[in-house]
Image (cartoon, rainbow, N blue to C red; front, side, top):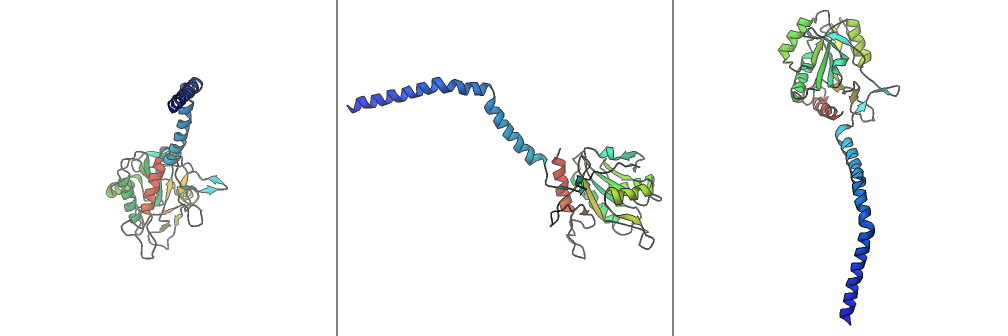
Length: 251
């Protein structure tokens, strides 16, 4: 009696499997042929990859609610070439304002920039924009000699000279980096020792401060090796390197 019941059970299970196969297997095959399952998985993976690989957490400097973009500029570089903001399109770059005869902070700033240049030597979409604030002295030839002495090798590192008023306007308004003449200070000029970081689309980018606002600048004077200066200010070159790497991954 128990043997017959067991046989009936097997027959019942086999019948259910047969019915499932007849009804549902063709539908599953149709879905696979129509790529429904593949499309769903592909969409999920695409969104995940895009978010993780191409979007950084760096902030935009916003003016009246709009991200601030680098204004147009055009100057002559150390090689006698005319360089404009368009030459930096599609590139991540660091901006500084300096002058050749600077007796204080400029040599330290440019040694840090050379170190940054060497860190990203394999990246063709990385550059530096150095604008002199003493164009009356810093001619193309003077800038060329300076670049050679400091080991400037990145073809996207342009040391530029031009009209003084235009350069000061670019510094103070365009990049929000102070620069000006002052006969009462050593060297006759005063300027910020900060660097600005620009993304591939020409927007000023930076980390946020403790209040959630963009820091805007990176301290350019203190080296990674020094860690801190005599006033207890912490270096930001390592931070700048990290953020350059982030922007290089963005499209």
